[in-house]
Length: 212
Image (cartoon, rainbow, N blue to C red; front, side, top):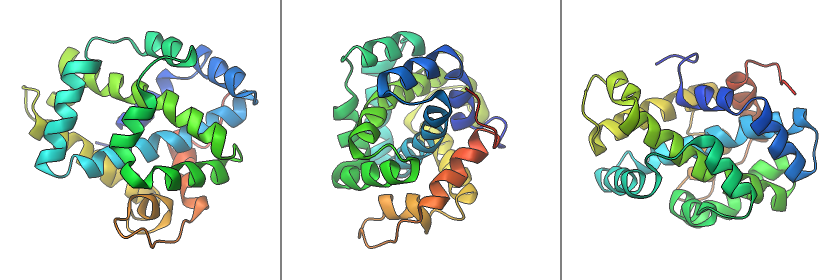
């Protein structure tokens, strides 16, 4: 799986245009800043999901949630729902980040200039969109399962796909053991947050040229 076909890159491209304009309007920021913020937030969410799915129990729980709550949902419809105050964004963030959620919000808020409150809003909106996207990949078009060399969707295949994504994100950020991803996801919580790493991943995902 290369940078052109990564899950994060694909989802970011699907949010270009009208969805990004809606996000920018709701946050009260310019589309270019919203573009950069989404480019930083998506790898943070995908990296955390990849870490959770690296354990069989985590992969099983995530697979079950995708199947039960997020399958068959259109990304545009999910965005409309979350911008209208609906969705399970906060609940999903709790599962994804656990007690590291405030750390994730703070890091994203600092890296993007959004501040903690708007960073939390953005993560709450994007979390259900990421889940709907993953469910679509796993259960509808089967691209995700095929990419892992397995025609059947399963927790194991989901773990493989997200493991590949996490590894790629880590490489783009200079290694998941360091930088903001490592610090946010670090079990001990003692890593130093390198905010430039988060923006580096976002720029890589977006091709280095933010589009309004």
